[in-house]
Image (tube, rainbow, N blue to C red; front, side, top):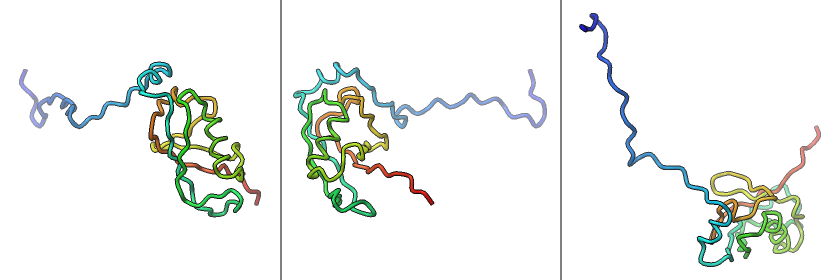
Length: 133
């Protein structure tokens, strides 16, 4: 068939360059992830925010805490350890932990289920109540 005047020839879509397309990280099952580690003990680096408008007794000073945990520990237990490391000033239920990718960790999940291994870094984000106007 002869193309009509002014028509563009069909160009097949370009295949993606596999060298530049990053595959999403594979999430392993909790037990498989735990078995892949040399040790079930993980050290988590938790970056604290500066005090800002939070109560001074929360001891938020912009430093980084290192918290030792077992890969099978739930996030809720990690929050309790962080609270203890801060002298109990900030209650565990006022702590949110956020990964480097911005995802918040859910209390009911284990570190293994989240594929959080040795030397993982995260950010403490204090929960704030909605203020009435």
